[in-house]
Length: 215
Image 1: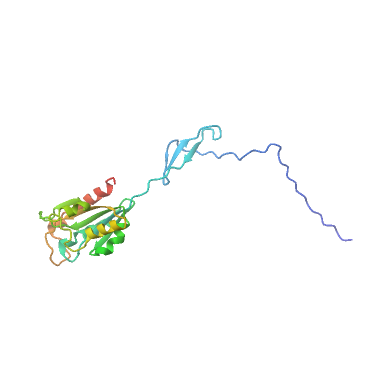
Image 2: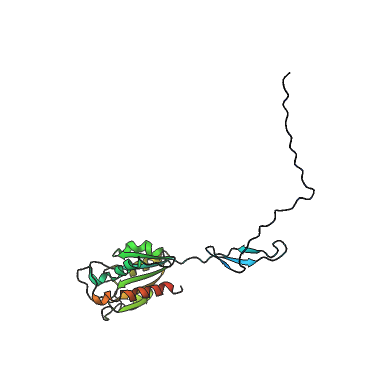
């Protein structure tokens, strides 16, 4: 006679009054403290459900503004390449989030994507305005056409004015500021004149001031 197989039956007893939900975990944290990294804010919970336990409320973070520092000029013509020298130095710096440094050289209309992809552009360029070598000028690019004799930004035919004006046609014109430097020498050579070289720290300082300036 063969043995019979038996099955084990397991039954679950459901309590008559099951809890509507699991207990809420308690967390130990400082009330009203900020939460790093996600823009959250800690608030004290109110009401019976949480019994005064601190809960995290997410607060949307502000979008980071994209700022491009654009150094332009011909590096082979001494002071004409001051913008490129500034860009190279700033690329080695620890800059705020959202700030990009671009060595534009003499790319001209090749800079269109750089300009239209930014919300603010800070151009560093050689500007012949008749001042002493190393003089520094600051002006908004929209004001440049009003002073054609004072601000000749086309020393190297970069066409930065044309690039910005063309960006208006496609509706992507950033706020653009020019930091101009009066050149002393436009002779062949990759070295800056002593007058312009001495102003590099001040030029970088002014660019950083523009970066920190509220939009």
